[in-house]
Length: 300
Ligand SMILES: [Zn+2]
Ligand SMILES: [Zn+2]
Image (cartoon, rainbow, N blue to C red):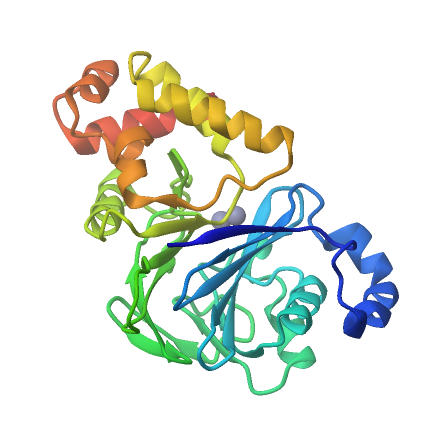
């Protein structure tokens, strides 16, 4: 089970960091991602705080409640990250970088100066402050949580998705941080790869358990679902999710997380083998359909 806690700065900013907050006022204005509220998804064995950044990016603070150890995914705005770390009273030990693009890795050099002894993980030598280069299947721990690296080249050649599980007792779902590979109802642009590689990446992600919570790098859901609707006008799951996503965005609520099971119902890029999607693309081959969909989406 998980519960949704809506947290909005500054109303709930704790006494302890009030001073820091005011000192960081300028930073807040430019960087504390005003596009969405900062929401926490808490499960018994792990907690993820969604921290908005820039115009539509998300950073994620992954926390192990048992040890109070934490990792930050794509900390483009280190000031906002440190505010959240202070408020959550956790110890930040690692940076999980999905890929080298500035809006994901651009804060790495700064955050290693703010917070000593951080391990910086990533799959690409172009990532700033990289200390632990990882490849497909590599595993490491954040507190008692296990993180498995999934190499998903295509958007960039060194893109890594991070799959996190806990072997603690209780009812909890794994989570995956998908950067710019898998978005809710969408996928990243093929900057350094092919349709075949994106198909392989999506296969790897769709093989994760259906209840896996998906945290992606950008808030693109409404636009993506509008595209999904043009691909499968008869898909009632797409219609429902689009209505829900519009409602969330009207209230500045993030549409993350999704689940792998949900993506199989609403994400055309994860449905390239389904007849309605193949027909829309006028193809019989899933890889070719992937290429057609991406080209259509680029112009959408
Ligand atoms: Zn990117
Ligand atoms: Zn991005």
